[in-house]
Length: 234
Image 1: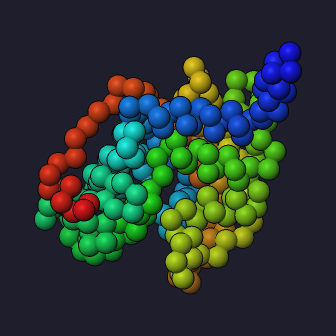
Image 2: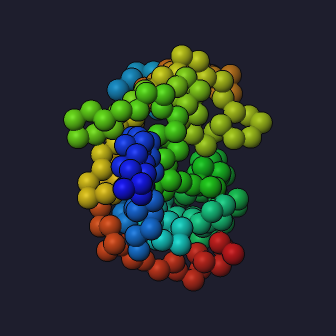
């Protein structure tokens, strides 16, 4: 009876964040999964996305943490493999490491930004937990978990990979929200919105972004890293 009481008490104590973490862990522990991420930027007149890399992304993740990404960036399709801080990007010159990658199609600019962005890249199973921990009032609403980011949380989500380093942008008026769906004990979809004013490199941009991530092929996703890419990840 005592054990039963402890079990019931533990179950009742589990809140939305615990359920999201459990569903994310189950996703990460699968042999592999795929996803598609799409971005909407309603405030296109003000630059919409600000100094960031927009466009749809399709990805695959394996249980060992290896991730394959195919990202549409402007007029380029960027392919990459990442694992932890290491990775490789496909360029016209062949596979290059994250720190040496130049602009796909020539030039050093955007490709290097993508390289920095992909260092410590978080696949959905990890990202959704990181985002949920930045929500102050997470709650179950209908068939989803919803909540608003704290101001600091919204700033971190808005800045993304640019928040790292000495040249992090200044952000004001940051706010946003998160919505997470769980199906069969797994994260099936999540979406988040962020908006605010970002000052970067002397330029100020109003950013309004909505990102939707859809999970698929859980347990049925497989891929092999090409040897040329693997050599750049070592």
